[in-house]
Image (cartoon, rainbow, N blue to C red):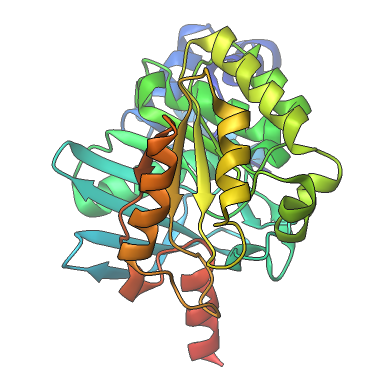
Length: 342
């Protein structure tokens, strides 16, 4: 049995036209039921013949993510959703409400195998990849729960998007389809820890979404101690891939820099960052430590680090801290929730 939700129009046409010998327009009808009407069963597709519906039900079904629990942080207008897949796996997404619109941070994997030391979602390893339909359904379900239209998507939740490349590409094509959510490519940002070959592939895909790299350290040895991905993807090679992405797509790259006091905050780090990014329009986004076992650096300290970078002419911003009281960092909510259930 195959879940219809998540199939693209071409995949549906192959079923309807080639398998069931039905007119091509039936595929469009089904596509609209799935992504315009967000139906939960084949029986709701009332403009299909009863005979076709019965044939479909023998091999296909429609299943959506289910809301397990939601947590709101009123002071920052942030909501974290704990969702359950049809095989009872818990995944997370975070809704960030800004004056400019609603941004949803979605997960692309259940768990993660990258092993970054500051990330909660990788502590239990990778459970499985999410399908393109499940990633898309995070948006549909939250939109329905909140009664809003999501204006921006960030692939920064649990998982490494480029480690689930094919399904993520399938998701991006679906979410930007004019007959689904018709999201603008400019409103979508993918964050990666740096799989260089996939960055080149993404650059050549024609999708032209925004790209963010989890940098966190400018030196190979230092970055490797924080991010095991560095062993096979040296920072200079990864940066070359991002510069290629910039030249190919015209999108300015954001480099996430998780500041850890006494680790990656030295003058040597600042000088190296200058060497890496001088002459580019790259943006470094400095953030607090995403690790509940470490003390977060205070704002005064972050500003001092940022000022040193700006004095060298580097473009820098500071990420706002949102959702700390609801464990909004990827993986933290599920970990807390499961511990409470035990």
